[in-house]
Length: 190
Image 1: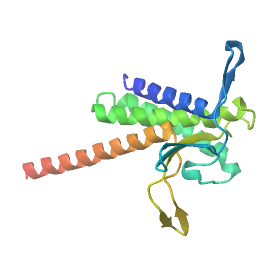
Image 2 (image 1 turned 120 degrees about the horizontal axis):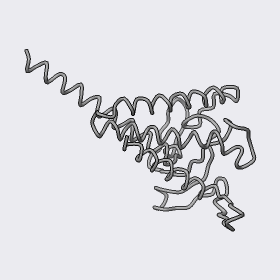
Image 3 (image 1 turned 90 degrees about the horizontal axis):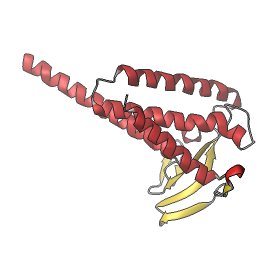
């Protein structure tokens, strides 16, 4: 279960980056990090890459299913995280790529789940399950229109989102490699 170190690394990197973006205070340690103002943006690489502070009150890519669905989505995320952890356990003897992929998925899921569960309470704006996910990586590299909407940049995301995306890509790669290998074995037997 050493793959869980990857999950832990994702969660720590995700939460530390979000806390520095949003800001936090630990009075008994005399520690106060101001953070960024909502919507504030810093250019890192020209207009191509910026750090922009936004919060996502809804699902991925800001899809809003309505406030009545938030609790069910949060419960689903908890159950899905438990499922990923279980699958990570039962696949502990599979390839390193599969274990890392699952660990990235688990770490990313937990990172965003922490925001949903606790940020509303910690920052005093919402009850448990109704927190907003902090996003801040912004890339502008294309202009596209989909379904009547015009997009000038990739949706703003965070470390957890990146980990989930990489994990899904690795699992897809493993699946296609496994399918290709299975097809090759069938051809050799025929």
